[in-house]
Length: 299
Ligand SMILES: *Cc1c(COP(=O)(O)O)cnc(C)c1O
Image (cartoon, rainbow, N blue to C red; front, side, top):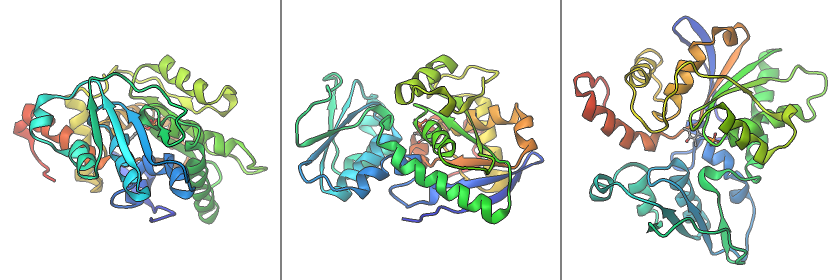
C-alpha cells in the first residue's frame, strides 16, 4: 500500500488548493475505506472466520470489505434489503467486484443483529466504527508531516461526509496532542441526511463536541444517490480542468458546497480525495442514460 498517499497542488476556478490522493493508496483497497478498515488489516483476529455487514448493493464500503475479507481469508456475508433488477441482471461496479471477491449476498432478510459470536466480525453500515480511529490517526499524521515540510502554518481541510466517521476521527486526531502548532480545521458537508443527522452521527462516535469537524450547511438539498445536472457538470469540469476523476456520489456535492464558501480558500486548503471510483461505474451509467447528450468522458 502506498502510504503516505501523495499530496498535489492544483487550481480550480481560480482557487489554488492541495489534494490528498487517498484514491491512490492501492488499486484495490483504497480511499477512506482503506483508512477506516486499516485497523483490521494491521491486527490479527485468530478466532474470526467471517465478516458480516449490511447496506446498499452499490456501496463502496461493501466492496472494500470484500477486499479486506479476501486479504484476511475471511468469508464475507453482506445483507441488502433490496437489489435493483437492472443491477442484478447487469452486474457492474462495486456489486460486480464484491461478488467476484467471494461476497455472499443476502437479499431481503433484514439487517443482521450484531452477534457476540466469536467467529464473526460485525461492521456497521458504511464502516461507522470506533476502530476507524486507528487508520485516521495515520492520515492525520501524514498531513501534519507534509504541513511541516511545506512550512504551512494554518490549514483548512475539506471532505464530504456520509456517516461522518472519516471527518470526525480526522478532526479528533488533530485536536489531541498537537502542542503549540496551530491545528488544521476540518470542514465537512453532509451528503446523507441533513446537518442534524450528521451531528447525531458524530455524537454516536464522540460525545465531546470540541473534537467535531465544522459542518457547512449546503445551500441546496441534494438527496443521496440521486442524479443532479449541476453535480454531473461539476464532476465533468473537475475532470476536464484538473485531470482528476472524483467520486460521483459525494464529491460533486462536496465541491459545489466548497465553492459556495470561498472564505475557506483564504487559508491553504487541502481537499481529501476519498476514493470510491469503482462505484462510479454504476453512477456514470445512470448519468449517461439521462444526460446522454453530454458524454465528454468515458472510463
Ligand atoms: C464512504 C465514502 C465517503 C463517506 O465517508 P464517511 O466516513 O462515511 O463520512 C465519502 N466519499 C467517498 C468516496 C466514500 O467512498
